[in-house]
Image (tube, rainbow, N blue to C red; front, side, top):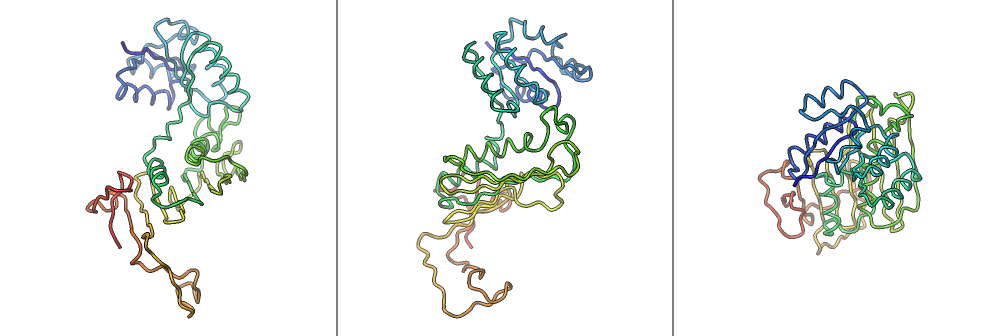
Length: 319
């Protein structure tokens, strides 16, 4: 028997939830949705869903056991609590609330009512992130110490309600929540220091270009950037480990992993080394021979698959 589901808020994310569930989750039946905007309710009807005449009508529907809250951020707490008190289990869009105290209220109601409450942190399953997680988990690049994670656009705007402070808009609560959640889930160690730069370049009301640095107790440093005015993008990921480096260039997961061979012994002559950087030993390139280079299949589709410690979606080519 499918779970009967209803959606509160049928904007970009609410309609995305409906399409995704309909296409991929046969165990859930989306019955209908409610939105305070008439144009959104028209889309509910166009999708063939029941358009609830009011929020209360949705909450009073005895067939509905699961509700997704996909509204602007400042409404998450009150709607999640109302749905649980009405006997519904709740999936809430991120960021779950605007402060920790509001989340604690939600958790208290979940315990009181016995209803399940979950937050939609979908980017824990992004392919690029799973590649990084697998590379670290398997020790492919050794112990990580610097991790750079960047999401960069150039449209110079926060769309719709995301540009308004009242609604909990801004880049930190939009993409920042995802990138911070990924890093916190990736590094099993407490955060001991935070350095944040939240800039309002174009929006006039909320942060639209930000950099956040997190220092972990185990020595890992994560540098996160979310930009809306970047015309030359840096890699999506750049991870430095003691035994190698991982780079993922873009959302297609094009990139590479370069790892040192386990038997490599590095020796330097006393003579100075002359490079494009001038006379230097430190910045001179390493010899190519002791490297092993893995590339993403989209970059080198004819490469040889490595089946030992390599993440499953990467392919290898020796230098």
